[in-house]
Image 1 (cartoon, rainbow, N blue to C red):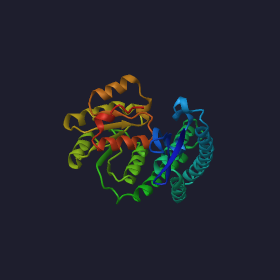
Image 2 (cartoon, rainbow, N blue to C red):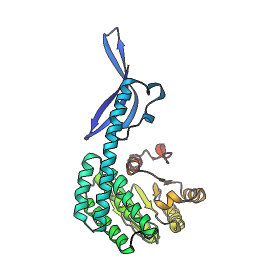
Image 3 (cartoon, rainbow, N blue to C red):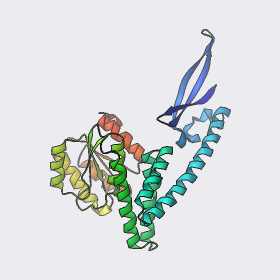
Image 4 (cartoon, rainbow, N blue to C red):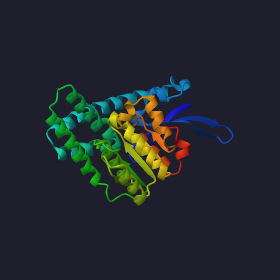
Length: 300
């Protein structure tokens, strides 16, 4: 007999597919975990091994999970609309309240991934198609950054573990992604040195020397800055043996040749492509726990 076991960790439900067998000698049932299925809110039928997908107990959990996910999707869409209006109106405090409510049901990383980042993509798309005034686009960006800084301030005194430097290459002036990453890392207890945006290479190298971080995160938004990012990664590699994670819209949209060139200039470079914040957090934890070489293949 198989069934789905629920385990609650820090307020969130996690699913495990468990097989139960009767031990006639001991006259008791023995339970064996078949597969860890992940967070209940992300659970789908694809997580179930083929041979168990028609099991009545599994189907029952799937039905209940689908209903819960639909409810959360509606909440997310409502939250996105609220955040969009608040951004346009410069309502930082209202965004903070919305964030707190959403975070109670999911996580801070999920709020950034599923709500704020999606709204900012929409803002950018509307501006590109002349459906949003440039002034309104600036208000949205400025308000988003102010809200992120306010959220980040909540965790400034809790950093306890490994130091992480966050930077952008020279001429890269976009740093909302850097501020978001700083926010979620601080929440998880990391010491974070966010020196974005657009710091000259010499200054980045000196800062690395002064702080001796366990990891460097580099964000690149514009494709025009791929070359400067590659150059910075190469320079860091010439002076320090430190893991470097490089991500951002430019990396997502870059071609295979550009990606291979960037990885070839420094053996410690790892490209993060279309990754969620929760996945990024796990990679950061693996690296700072000295599991970098074991986990280096985790590219999406």
